[in-house]
Image (cartoon, rainbow, N blue to C red; front, side):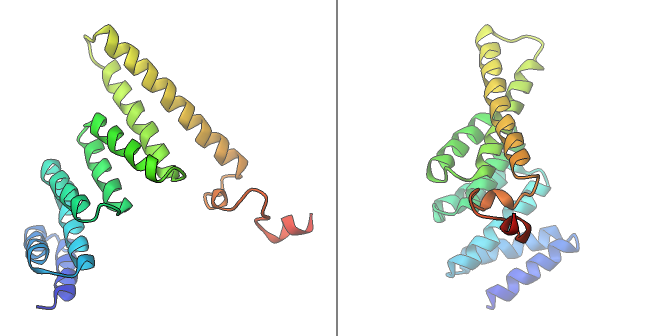
Amino acid sequence: MNTAGSLGIGNILSEYNKVTEAKEIFKVIENSETDPSIIKHALLNHAHLLMNEENNEFAINLYQAGRDKFPDDLQIALYLAKAHFKRKNYSECQKLTIELMMSHPNDLRLKFNLALCLYNRAAEIFSLTVRRVKQTEDAIRDFKVAKSMLTQFIALQNRTSGDPASYLVPSTAPRDEQQLTN
């Protein structure tokens, strides 16, 4: 079986709204392929289709299976955290994001995701008509942390003139020819 070709067929089927058929192809590839790269793509594509169908629980299970098979893959972990976020399971999203931040401390996506997670969890608590004092205190703390983190992002953006790629360049290095001449 040409599994790379089958993976492509599954992708094309999903583009043409033949989602059930695409998911079946991805399942077969996941269970029969030996090439880790192809397994990973089939597993992720299958989980993405489940997320699009709002079948978040099964998608989370697939992303977790992918994380178990590829524990060092940051992209799979980000998808898993996003699935928890979409499911409003903010504590799991926060736990996973903090764990990822330990191994990827300079990844701004993780810091932004954590701020967004804390903000949404706090907003959810404040939307409750009845809440405990501890919940309110935790929500206030989460809002403050999220605000601090988001303020840092705004400051970073202002320092880099809004150029999203410029934060990747060391601040002492000139970014363009005009800076070289000044």
